[in-house]
Figure 1 (cartoon, one colour):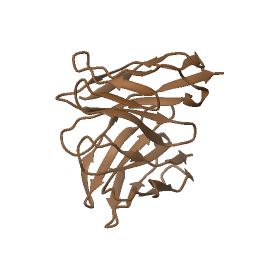
Figure 2 (cartoon, helix red, strand yellow):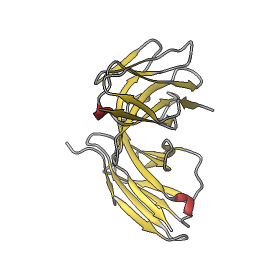
Figure 3 (cartoon, chains in turn green, blue):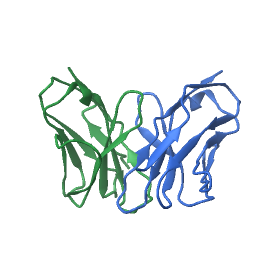
Length: 113
Length: 113
């Protein structure tokens, strides 16, 4: 049973560019959450998708957007990249039951130059 | 708002030493509490969880007890191994519907042989 997978593993972009990160949830999971983890910090919640809709959002600007597909996979899009967007982006999947644990992917390391 | 505070690292111990990593939280109601571990170059893995007051979560020799009166969820292990070297994150889920996890800043543990 494959766990949560993310692509690409690493990415280098230039300021002002746009980026798309992808996530496939653990088999059987229906909810996908995205987190940003800056170096030496804990993950910060970006948003969560369930039934192809954004149902919760953290304190991130509109430059961060996402999508969930009918097969529960998800994309994170970031427009107009800033140097401060450089981080590890983590995808987590779960079942839509409050209090359930999340399963994290290995992350995508984004570097903005 | 909801938040998690954990002891700053790094924590350096010798093999077979006793480990305590302190974690306190601020939240309304009764959140679920978690400890996640992040090994070098990997994503987060759930280590243990507790969903109500006085619950004890345990896994791989690690334990943590949900203390509502002190709003704490300290992580302990009686005898650490070199392989326990990692970053440990305390986290909470507000249990207010949906699933958003709030993480502490993480505590890096080094175990020397």
